[in-house]
Image 1 (cartoon, rainbow, N blue to C red):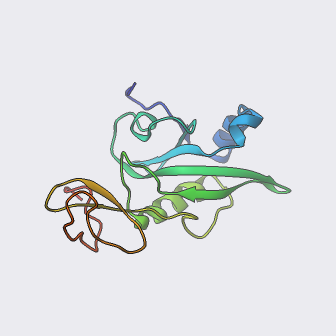
Image 2 (image 1 turned 180 degrees about the horizontal axis):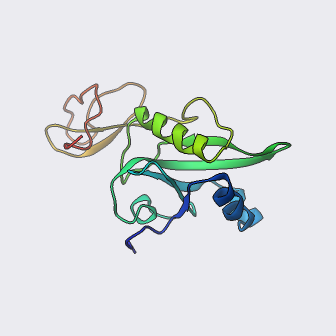
Amino acid sequence: MVRPGGGGRLIGSAADFDGWIAERSAAELAEPFTFVVGMDGVLRLAPRRSEHVVCAGGDLVLSAGEISFMREADGWVVCEVSNQSTGYCPDVSSWAEVARALDDVELGRPSGFTHEVVFRRCPDCQDHNIVREDDFVCVFCGSDLPMAWNVDPAA
């Protein structure tokens, strides 16, 4: 399913977004979309049930998650956005890249992720964890998880 260039639509300008959103059905607009911000800083959008890695064409990303849009009097705005991507497990600090990509598209947006997901890789068993309620303990082996994001060992 992963194709070079990505399965998501590149949204690099307000005109790109306007063309893309005009093609969406009411049913599609009722649920969130999959998004990634590529290493080039450009937003890509795909239907919700799309895998993030497919949306990104298998490439590395600066951020990934889910995003919803709402029509207001002055145009479209982002009403919800999260870093929920179990494929990329982006850190909450990736918001800066998302904000920059949304600003490039001239979309109104919140001041941060409306739903933050905290991901950590267990240093002992290497499994990926979602940290809930500040409980930094691996659900698989019981080891302590680091306080700092560590999912991508190259980062």
